[in-house]
Image (tube, rainbow, N blue to C red; front, side):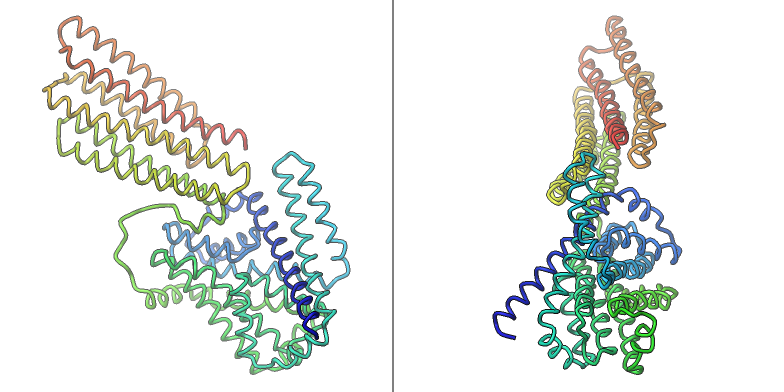
Length: 546
């Protein structure tokens, strides 16, 4: 092979790999967008049962078409405390099964019908360009991605066929199992996709090329790809919490133990490939894909009963840090899946709401009891709410640069709107601390009856807050009418309290200097109810559009 031929071969190989990865990206990104509800539903079924969690990992990876994305998401879930290590272990095992689907798709390139599948690129792009419906556009891109996968495989295979003799001379001399294993690890670590590496090997087989003697040698590369696939999760967990790093380690241990068992089996049975998959399947591409599936399924069957053992090993190797005080649902790993990142943002806004409402109630108690210490406590809670709010804003900015879907942009806008309304609660809490300071400074007193009426009004606000949280988290629109009823009660209470206050002023019962504090205080309570109602109708508008 001359230098020109070598350069041309490498260009075609890289071009084919690039087209393949673009196709996989089209599949991954648009399936994830189209299956948003299903993915949320899948991860919503997280339980303590190993089989259930394994099925979650398998189903999520089958939908997303990327074990790397699924594993990174699982690491993120562990980092924010949604999933524990035991649950994550079973999910990772399931994700390894789900990722074999890509290799099975690639193996179809060995059949003549795949030439026609390449036309899906044109069909899919036309659907995406001509249809106005967002879901149809995504469906078109999925179809186009499917076609691009086979075009990429075809380009790689054709490049190898042209230079088959030269390539075969190189690969037929590579017989050392350890070297082949390392090749699989390095290639996968570089492209950060075991599917891409496996597909290149499948493209070689379609071109009629073999590794070593054509026996078990190619399988050592496949074993190496499973180790290389751990790199993405390991890198993503470097700056994460202790349990997140343990999750990545469990992923590595699972694949390492499985690869070690199979490597020993292959060395003890040199004719393993010929006696099993070589007999059962005619196509070499199918043989490789089937071994990939067999490996991951078998390892999961073997190791699933020992999830607890993997957890203990990870805890021994990675010791506990001092517990972190900060609680958050936000994790940069979630940004790879905008729909799930938005779900976490919604959870974070609820955390913000809890903090803001806690600050408000503390500020109210400081006013009711004239307690200076409570005023300082309320200020501290307001500062904590402000910090959470700015974390949400920064996360929204990073998410908006990742997502290009119109539906995601609307959801991001809604989260921003809700977070802003919640921060108004914190501002109202700050106003209440000022009313408390003014009452203490000017020695203002309110009658027991007035204080009880204010308390009842605030209890109505607390009820509205609870309904609002349920509407945000459960998306239960049947609660909207109840929220409207409570908001009407708050409005009516404000009007009644102010009217009664004016009557008391005219009768000389109340001091005139108390009017400013009282009227503003009651009006602020009503404003709080208004902002909660704005959140309710933001969620309602989002649900009705979907």
